Length: 114
Length: 111
Image (cartoon, rainbow over all chains, first blue to last red; front, side, top):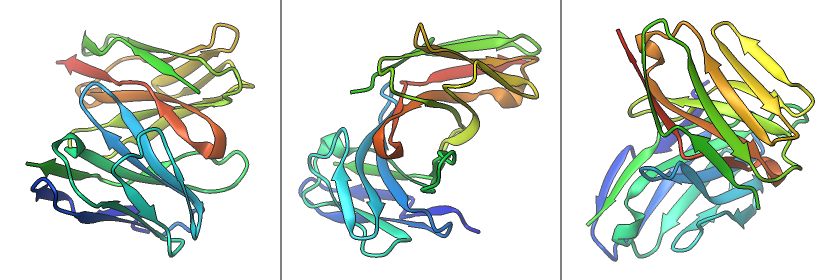
């Protein structure tokens, strides 16, 4: 199993440009999450999904959109990038099963917005 | 909503010493508390977790303790080694298995 993979690994955008980050998992997990990590602030939840076709807002959703058209994929979109969105983005997934709460993380995408 | 505080932000120890990282949480309904280790350039990886029905859990050199009354939990690493150097995050679970993370502790183990 590849686990959780993220594409791309690095990206540089100019203010106002758009992009989509792709997260894929091959563990048949129901729940998927997008976090951003900024220095001194830990990981903060942007959006999450509890199943195919469903999405919900997390702690810091403004400026981002998400889609979960297939169970194994969770896409994070930036419609008009801003310098404040410079961050490292992590995707995670977990199994919907009592007592199985571990979230598995991808390797991250480092995004710089100029 | 849930709030998790983590201390210290940096911790330097000599190889072989013990390291302790502490976290507090605010929501008494939280019942799952994982600890993640993040090495440079990588995603966080679970190293140990504890549920609210247990007071302590050990896995070789690492252990976690939980005090539900005081709403705090701690990570203990004994006989530290240079490869333990990393950033450690505590977290607490909320609805839909969402995690609220602490701000992280950078642990440096010097040979």
